[in-house]
Image 1 (tube, rainbow, N blue to C red):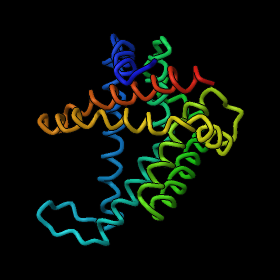
Image 2 (cartoon, rainbow, N blue to C red):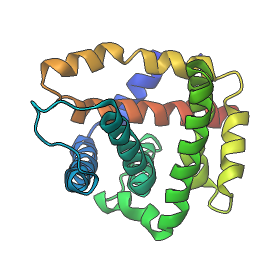
Image 3 (cartoon, rainbow, N blue to C red):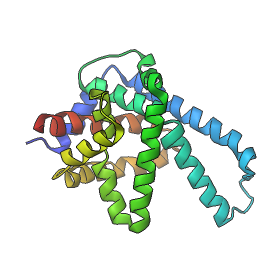
Image 4 (cartoon, rainbow, N blue to C red):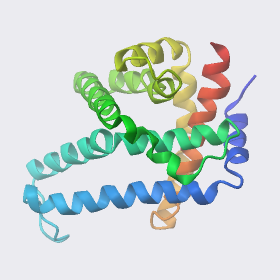
Length: 216
């Protein structure tokens, strides 16, 4: 039986010798995201003064802006980093430039991010619990798109839903087990997140490779 501990250990083993590229990939994504948000503050008229009161409207617009930026505009880069961690689990050692491979089909992955964002927003607006369930159902989409480049986006989403039948609870508990690590990053003023994110996302790749893929 493949336990959460086995998946986490597999992730750590996969990251051995690959931590440098992993941390750099997460750092690069964060810098690009932060820079674009900083520039867009002036476009949207958002306040950049910490002491200044932020209205509910401004907070809502910030959330929408951040969601569209991180999960739509930057989805190709997010997909690239996701595949980097998956490659480590598969025993490969791609170059750092591998994270830019989805940019060859930039619009495809940006559209993937848009579709997933719209679907998850719709289900979350109904109720939070259905939103979480759908998030878990769609969670394998990027892995499936990588291994089946001929699939349409909706075919990949449909297959992710099928593969996650009976596995959503397992993935939820696996992700929940990282809460302690997430709380510890607060003590590092967030710096620890650059190491926690590769660990978390490589574990998610291990979940796909060892539980989802092998069960197919």
